[in-house]
Image (cartoon, rainbow, N blue to C red; front, side, top):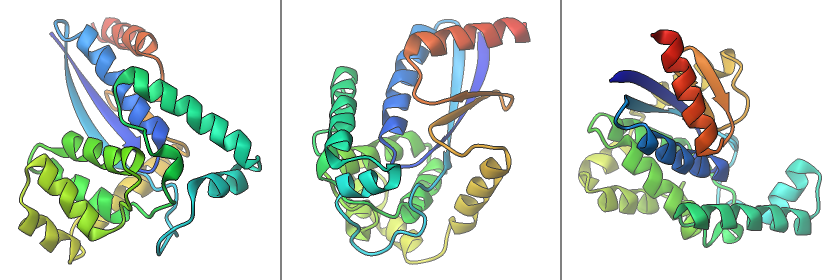
Length: 215
């Protein structure tokens, strides 16, 4: 049994990050008899200066990428089809608004201390892409905490404080220095970088190649 550590740099506001993890799950499932995987999540913010209610996602993306809203609607529709095939909820992908994810990242760090960081990340993805909820709103975040089965009172205290803010900023600075400027990014065994939401077959081959090199 070979140990493989996967550090995932991602943002809750990144649809490809949700798709990338779903594909990673499929790859890990194919290799579960040969490899033991450890997954750690690290923060990245697509909209670090976002505040307030945010704006509708389609015009925001059109302006960001210099494309039309129809083009962005088509691109988002493609992601919805991919997500459906993977069994993840992107039903409200085109209805969401831009959102600041800093506090959500803090909660993922908090959940990691209780062995629930992946569950927290996934419920946040579902809230944002599946239900178009505002993942900067503390009530929404606490509902996510409740859904995961963690202590809502403890989470509320985290949100009301500056706990885990330094850890989130350290993540962002560390991976920016390492050259990560788009997400998702998967760092394997603290050495190999896989960028983007790769297909399971690509990931399986990469893990096998890395394991062979280690051996």
